[in-house]
Image 1: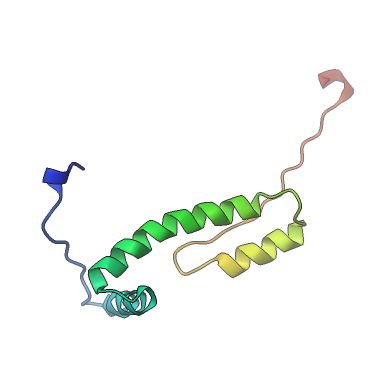
Image 2 (image 1 turned 60 degrees about the horizontal axis):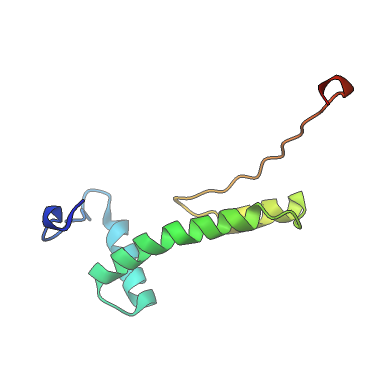
Amino acid sequence: MSHNETPGSVRIRTDDGNEWRFASIQKAARFYDCNRSNAVAFACEDVDQLVSAARRVLERDDLTREQRQEIAETLSTRAVSFDVETEVSVTTKGEM
């Protein structure tokens, strides 16, 4: 989206069962110690970086499967879940 296509404001619905959104935005504003608009923007940018970092940690070779599963469970949230899968491959002599 180019700069001239950026809207002047963005509305976030907080009625009809979405009241939790306002509470979450308020928590983010307290966490970042800023206004609600900046808090939403900071959280949106941070989530991408945090998920990428978590993925890198979970892909490390020096962790056991149990450690990876524990980390995945710890980092999983309401909106993001991490699953650890084990891939086993078999190569026969004929395939070498």
